[in-house]
Amino acid sequence: MSKTLAQRLSGMMLFFTALFNIVDYCLTMKVLEMGLVEWNPLVLLWIETGELHIIKIILIPLILLVIWKLRSYFQPRLILYATVLF
Image (cartoon, rainbow, N blue to C red; front, side, top):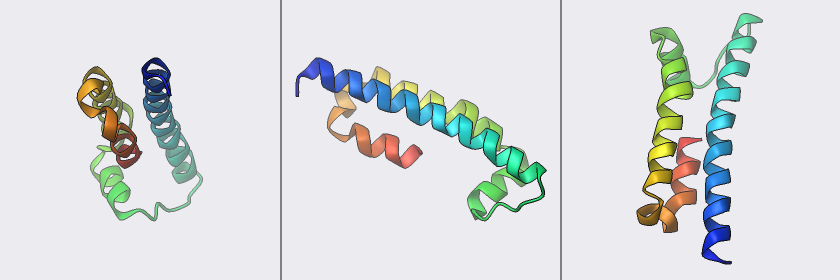
C-alpha cells in the first residue's frame, strides 16, 4: 500500500471515528429521552455529571485531530489509538 493511500485511509478512519462518536452521543441522548437506561457504567457516570457531551463531541474529536497532526509519529499504531477512542 502506498504511503499516500495509507494516509488517506487513516484520515478517513479518524474522521469517521469522530463522526460516529457524535452520532453515538445523539442516539444515546435520544434513547435516554425515551426512558431507556444506559448500561455502560462509565458513560452513566459522565451523563450524571454532565460531562458526556464534552467528552463525546469535543474531547474525542480533538484527540483524534492531534493524532492526525502527529500522524508521522503514530502511523504504525494509528488504528489502535483510534479504536481505543471509539
